[in-house]
Amino acid sequence: MAAKAFSATKSEKVFDIFNVILMTVILIVTLYPFLNVLAISFNDSTDTVRGGIYIWPREFTLENYKTIFSYTGLIQGFKITILRTVLGTILGLISSSMLAYTLSHPEFKSRKFVSTFLALTMYVSGGMVPTYMLMRHLELIGTFWIYVLPGIVSAFNVFIIRSFIDGLPYALQESAKLDGANDFKIYYKIILPLCKPVLATIALFLAVGQWNSWFDTYLYNGNKPHLTTLQYELMKVLASTNQGAGMANANDLANQMAQVSPESIKMAITIVVTVPILIVYPFLQRYFVSGMTLGAVKA
Amino acid sequence: METLSASAGTGNVSATPEPSKKRKKGFWQTVVRQKYLYLMSLPFVIWLFVFNYLPLWGWTMAFQNYKPAKSFSDQKWVGFKNFVDLFQDERFYLVLRNTLAMSILGIVFTFIVPIFFAIFLNELKGSIFKRTVQTVSYLPHFVSWVVVAGIITKMLSIDGGIVNEILMSLHIINEPIQFMAQGKWFWGIVTVSDVWKETGWNAIIYLAAITGIDKELYEAARVDGAGRFRQMWNITLPGIRTTISVLLIMSIGHLIGIGFEKQFQLSNSLVTDYSEVLDLYALNYGINISRFSYGTAISMFTSVVSIILLLTANGIMKKTTKESIM
Image (cartoon, rainbow over all chains, first blue to last red; front, side, top):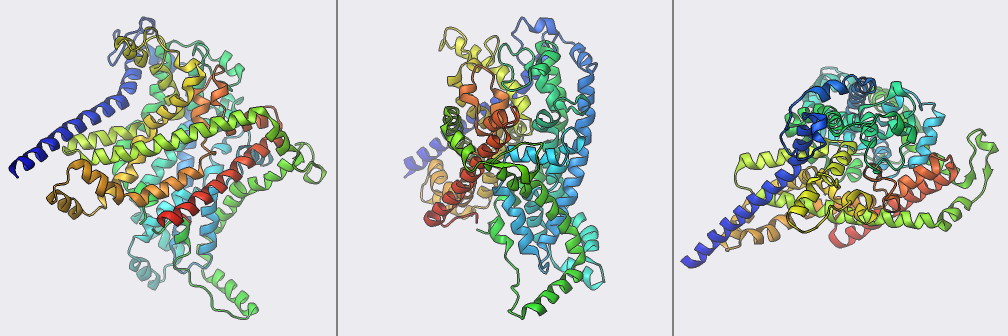
């Protein structure tokens, strides 16, 4: 009996040690690439060619960052990316919270229709070419609005917010109604303030989506330098000297236009493009974890 | 399991049968009474109609010899010609093979790894370490595929890439492997990149589901002498079965519509025979060389097969495990 208990605790110990090692390996595998990129971005660009930079720069310099900020494409990319992120996030928040509110309203007559109409968009899509043709007909190609308008309503986001509103005590709305408030007032004065945690989650989803998107720029606005975005600029720079590993489909003109960039410059741009989002997410962690849970496991 | 679309209908009070005229009048009265609710939803319904449903109308192009300059009534209708061309194109089968290969690898690995990551993370004792691992594991999710592809290319590079350096120093290989330049590595690289990027994020849902499991079950198992592996296998895994089924159905629905961002970013001209997936094929043949009708046929094929797969997976799951998303 005693021997059995002993072996149980011993195997528990072995398991715990194994688990800690496993998690440490995962930690290193996840972090190392970022630290490596960071180290190279701070290393002298000619020295980098010698190789052997791991997680610490050998010849520390800020030159790479100075160089990239003199690159006009990047500055323009920053402006457009910030603009689309701010606008896309605000419009997305307004639309999804309003729709979610109406869908959580038990008396709303067309609730079932709107809900089904919305849910179907998660499973059925016209596909890339029909969407492209639609954008052509709407004359959105070559404009800034193509970054913002098509994605304003997202079914997934609406359903997350709806689940959250469903969890709020309905008595709050009822008493406001008795006081003579109309549905819009209830949404604006009562629901929105209570929804702050879930709205923070959705704002993060929307902002990350906007910040990271590159395909719309490539497909619709690739030849419009004044509408370029950060990710697209990064894509061009990274593609410039990948020794035969350039983008398969990127138009060659873009490749030729981007100068041959040394490794350290590429890494500095990668950091500049990535860091703003990475600074934000740990602070929103507790919100998005609960938001994801609302969206998917509503058991 | 109350699910997204199923819950759509709950609480909807069905109207009692009435003469149709009266009912119609009643409907408009409700609309007026609920005008704010309509004002807050109707604009977005129209929005959805334009951006999500109008492209479906675009499927008509697949049956035409579509010319952008002509109006709809002037287009030449060609029946199934574009589909016949598509199914006769050898490239199509290559692309379909690539799509299926990468999506099956994706389902196997990016689906299973997060489940086990969540289960093992849940077993960690120290709460600070646990939280650190968790926070760090989300990090790659927030990075774009442009950046991830840059990082992966760097890690796998032949001069100074860490992967080649480690393999060399362990004497597993004698000279660096050209990972990015050889087609045979491509599917693996895409899968590993995806696992690296999304494991932490995909584990969130499972971690939440694990928190919901009754703690007394573990107590009881421990009293019965069940070890940690046994508890993981017999309590944790069955406890998150519902979550697993639902997510599995969803991912099967995306079996051939797997997206193309990672393939686009990680590929180069040397590996296109392994990297081209349906969406990229539609992009290259439909948009880049303006064969819009042919491209639409590809897009339509992808969408229709996705829906069939989703419904099939949903049906099978409903029969076998009583879980469904619809």
